[in-house]
Image (cartoon, rainbow, N blue to C red; front, side, top):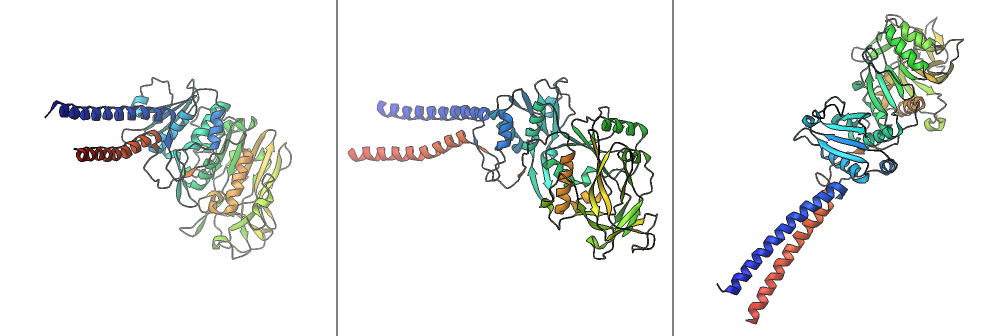
Length: 473
């Protein structure tokens, strides 16, 4: 081989090596730029990795450091959460994003004072004094109306950042410890609260040292089967005296659909009754039935109640939309006191009330039964506090909550009880099959595209040069 051919051969090898080095270094540099500036193309159908306008507005007003820790176990990383968190860090210089494993999190020596989690997000202020934790399960919500799943991480992160900046969160606490209906059996109701971006958690009065805050919290009790202890009553009474908000769903009876029998609750609840009496409300020991045998669910203990809450425009419901209730008792308003009571839900004059006994065998109207209109839901305001009571809890159960009237009514009721302005509404995003498994880095994609395009062109060009030389020879 001549010296000229050797140098040509060595020159080709050298150019190839230089090209590979440039390709590798370019990929590393561009990947770094992508991570720092989130230069990606969101290829998902519902823009899962793209920040909404509402989130951008909140971030534009941010004036303090926010730490966002994405926690995941090795091999269980959630690509959706990781990519979305990177968008927050790239958009605002005040948001510091860190990927961390549970093992590393435990070595922070008390800097982040939270219970350990395996997968999820931890959001903290600059001094790590205010911290919110969301497990991986809490970042996804099943929409019971259509059976799909929603990705709610953006709503959680944005409302938490907004709460840290404003210095307060609007919290909904579900009372536990008295045989209440568990939150796991109220998926639709929980979904409604989540869609409104309330911070929802369970609350055991006897086991919690941190008292409720009247300025930020709503307490909800769903069908308690046992009474409050004296100390629990005092804690809730103190919360109400400070301007608290309380929503009670009190059952006197429920229909067991599996056994086809009416179950009557006989437990005395003097502490709950005392709370109600302080707001001039009492629950009668009766059950309301419909005269029409062609009633909802083919049982007379179900009927459509008329919403009368002033904060919800009547045009929202129309004439035919009702709130479906089951096995409800009637309310009576007490005289005296400083509370102002208004009706929320009423049964029409076609219903009648039968005294509630241990066993009811005749569901037809009899002598001694009361007829006329009845109130089954009321709200009472005293100074800055507010108490609302509904005499049925099944109206927020998964079956009944799919009814438009029920959803609209209780969505409006909870918002009217909120002590703070509603947080920024960030919609969830339905999870669809993306075009690719995850979002792609735009710079890397351009680099790869350029290489894949340039390589064939270079080969063709070299081939044409060689052929041209042979012809000249």
